[in-house]
Length: 144
Ligand SMILES: [Zn+2]
Image 1 (cartoon, rainbow, N blue to C red):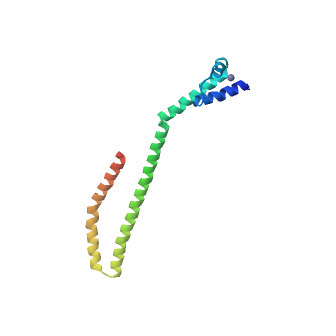
Image 2: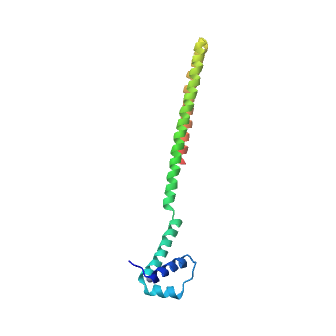
Image 3: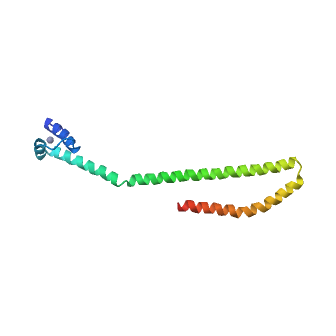
């Protein structure tokens, strides 16, 4: 559609009016009354404004995205926590194995037996505690 010179200048003025940079004058008013395409153009400006306003008031899409990214952060945190637990386990068992190896090297056989006895007592006793802490952590994660 070819726009007439009048329509072109009218629509430029309508944009200015829309942004409150210019007041509606009689020339523009009369043009809109007779020109369908300029009237439609003016209406579309306000439709656009409506859509933009609604997008700001109802940020449902953004809210969902924010929630999703929070979940992703939680998953990453959980993975890190599991990795940390694994590393801690490796370090602790490494230290214990190192101690046993050291005792074997030093031929402290009696101490090894004591050590093993202590471990046999401590591990079964500490296991329910570890499981309890673990399940409490998971309950906390499920709730929040
Ligand atoms: Zn026009």
